[in-house]
Image (cartoon, rainbow over all chains, first blue to last red; front, side, top):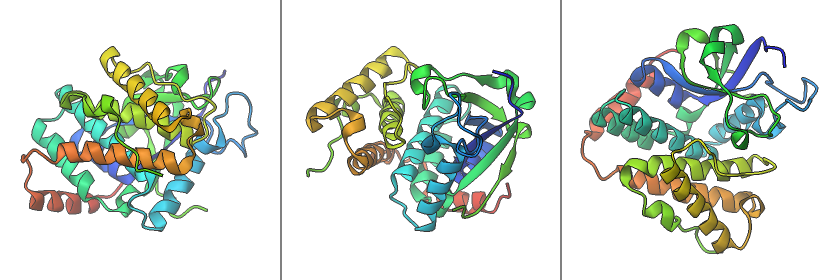
Length: 165
Length: 114
């Protein structure tokens, strides 16, 4: 596979601001070169539509628009943020009190705080920080997916697309 | 249908690993919601966490009498909700944070630009 130009990732506003404030603007990012595999002409390395950045963005935006604080996508994201805080505390990046602060903020957060943001990542800026996830973690064993465990904010742009339908 | 029960393997997890175990069980359920063709447990976590995740997934499947991808979206979402609630409840027990400070912190975060 030739190196992609751009990688895309959908994340929530809350996870973004927590990483900015508590983790030294280092972000955990799961990304793919295919924003919308249906438009890109799906091949064997494209991610399934249900896990594409566009579809994740669209479905999360819809649940946020409905004000559904109890949506499974929001609950999934809460678990991810809490797990991230636990890992950062165990790594000595944040204190136990900061972990508790993050948990408290996650508890207080409203559905709008989980609105999606699109990360647009130039591949060359992130290449040395990327790893391939284990095959069993991918949407499809052949799909092109990358993980950055600590991607600096300076390596990507953030776009709020609003209510995409 | 009965309410989903948090698997014993998750309930019995030590507090330091609870977020990890919950995250990887939820990931299996989330991947099924996204229609992944297969939803194996990740090999990423350390062995003790992975064993707990595998036991939790097995417990859910035995209780439901179906493999995770066959549970249906509503049931998958219910299990994600039960696991998320269990994790958040476990974190509420400590008193390291002043609730008023947390409200102020969230307001402050909301005032930041991208």
